[in-house]
Image (cartoon, rainbow, N blue to C red):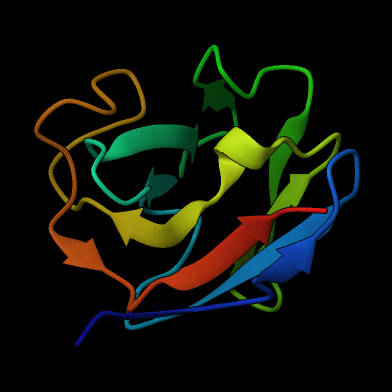
Length: 125
């Protein structure tokens, strides 16, 4: 049974940083891609980043390029999302997601068959 558990959310000031973690069980990170999505109140869900299972290559939404970095630790079976230069518009619930039938090349449309429970990120002064 696949299980994804996010942690690391919280309150940050504009310009600050947070690091989210996604602990995976029931799969190995070198087999399947892991993506981060986010959803703010009243807005559509948005794909933030994707890290490939095969080679660890990454894709990012234009809105976070240059500010966010996703990485993984295969030994800990954990994926990270380092968020720097945070903006109030980054406020959202962030979800860790995998898809056993898709790849980062097809992310984010119609993507995700296992989702974590989400972690709240709030950027405010």
